[in-house]
Image 1 (cartoon, rainbow, N blue to C red):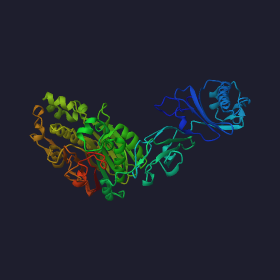
Image 2 (image 1 turned 45 degrees about the horizontal axis):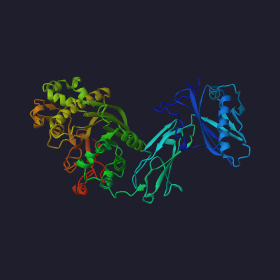
Image 3 (image 1 turned 30 degrees about the vertical axis):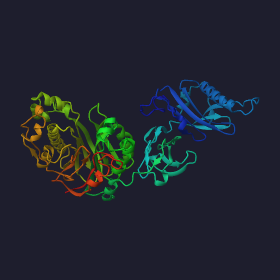
Length: 575
């Protein structure tokens, strides 16, 4: 049957007509494009008549069950109507169209259904007057193609939204153009990602996409930017850091980045603009501006493993994953609960690693029910206010298992973002204890699953903990006493006698910089890349921005810093 075999539609959330955006599609001459609609009962067909009498694109949506005669009559009626509107003399007779549907260049019976014709397995043609169109069935189609609203010279850009059917994105053609007035267009680049040059400043951009798969080419789709390319903010401090990361690593070395990129969720409000970051111009707080900066920054570090915190769902889907996938990375996002639109993301270099497993641990869900945490939960639930508060948190742990493609090494790469509140040292430490306890369980399980392979731990994140806090002490010394002061940071929620130890020999790859977070209200070291010293050693730490750079615009974020945190970048080597 047609609907089950020949016209199988890729699963898509789009339920509108496949050609609803057809006004942006340029149809190739002598080709008609036919596509099965998601309802399984209709088909869309589009073709272009272009001669001395007419220059018009036609789009029809018809039922598969209708007869060829009914289809031909409808096509003829549409063409005749267009011709009558285009005739030059009112008294001149309209030259009516002749229309026929052919199967392998032979006119088919008008009693056949359209479904019978299109599922016959032979070439289909649509003849209109002296023109014969080859009917291409389920050709690649661009459904949505949009550009960003903001462009900066020397910063990469890409489609803000690209959705397609029957399309292999990696072999499709993307061509970029510029224009001062949107009339005369000059080609300036090719490829999914384009970096505007200074000569593009004050120009509109146009992107043309020819969708392809391994057997067919679809109609060209074009989109024009609503805004013009703006001048860059000048050299950003991260560009000076990238002098240390010009080359990709290989062999036994790999590069790790940990970065809280500041979720749009926390910047798009009057409170953040007027209270938290009043020193940052509103346009520089906009995600459309900031994402250009942090993407250029992340790309330029040439990392093999990238752990990000505060990643918006939309930014992950339409920006980070869209751009980085074209540069050889694959990513996975775990949001902090179903109601929170931001979370933890991992990207890894597919030329060097394979993702064997990825999971999210939401502490509030797992503490009461996971036997790994039974003894800790027994102590927590003795204090109702403490248990209530910790169960209300959305703090999560992302745990990823990577296999090195150049060796037998395995990496457990963990990523977290601990609770920020000033009176929550005890919450952070308890979450820190739960995280390291769970990572022991994961490493033990991985070793059982892959006997004979070495398993190493890397733990990245925004821990919201300065080096004097219990979290840092626990991870770097291997233990924390039950009477540590952190457990009493809130008297009503105080807890004691949770002595925690772990077997890992961990150190902070970037040490304890003076600042990894820098705002007017608070500035200190909160971010770390912990690594297992028994298996790994640090070969390079990319220098962090100077205090002078951080203070240049009062604090960060700013026009040259996309976040209130700075990225940690370190090269590690297996021993």
